[in-house]
Image (cartoon, rainbow, N blue to C red):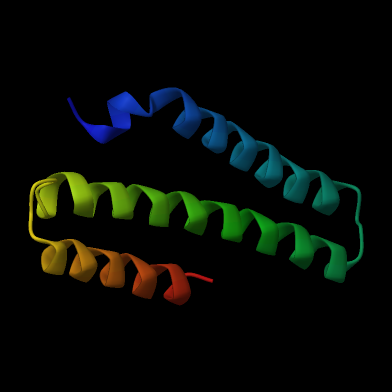
Length: 90
């Protein structure tokens, strides 16, 4: 069973929160709020999307790329790749 199926509900909850953030960007534009407020709202949305992507990437690495029974060195390498993505997607 895939990790997205095992963690389906928490992932869906995150997606729903992201949808709410995107809707907040739309409301801010419709209500003609200041550009700083729109950009901050948009940045929060982007951060939430990136966080979800990193979470899925990390699970994918540990579930499909590096077998759970892999050596500690391989597990550490997978952790390093995930950390690189986490930092790159800030």
